Length: 283
Image (cartoon, rainbow, N blue to C red):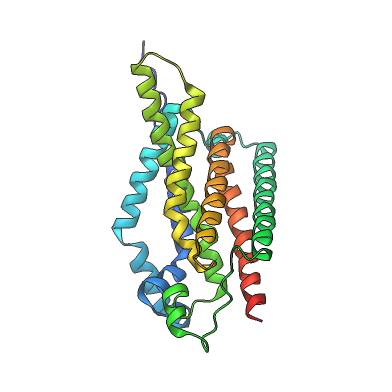
């Protein structure tokens, strides 16, 4: 009998699509990263200079190498424990389902919108009670030093919103696909060694541990929007941990695409709201 194909291995077509998606998100987040890291004004460069910066940055082997590692191992870990990419799998197998796409898209949109309104209500209550304070929009005429440290030197609001929206793609690759997949895989191996089946428990612990690590990693970014008080830190931790946990459950129940889309929608709505709030406070 011919050997059966190995199961639970990396689907390299899915990997290729996700890797292209990484470069897409990198291109959209690059201007703000350049502005913060190098204190330059990328959007004031001539177009030729900007293209050279993009080529140099995207051809840097280190970030691409790290993402290659994250995606390949993440897909392998996830395949071992049954975490999937249903939409991409259906498309690659040439069985695209419009119903599946609509279902994932609209459910992610609704959950992202719900999380956004939940955050708005909580922030509104805390601001009205004086527990947290949103940093007003900073203009160049006010404090160049503050702008240089917190917002960069001259990047437009569009690229700032693009950064905080599309960096959520890298976030899902790193903390859901890789970290959550690895934690669940490791815990299930331990349970297998102990001869016990705790599938739901391992998934739950994986979701919570990945959400906790992601929260700690993303917490400092909140300094751009909030005055960094004790209540501001507590608020940011609770909201980040809660939303990251929701994304983890979506990955488990609906697939990676659902987690990515929900994070994208939520991040976009949140950044638009913060930009408006900062502008109104400044006025």
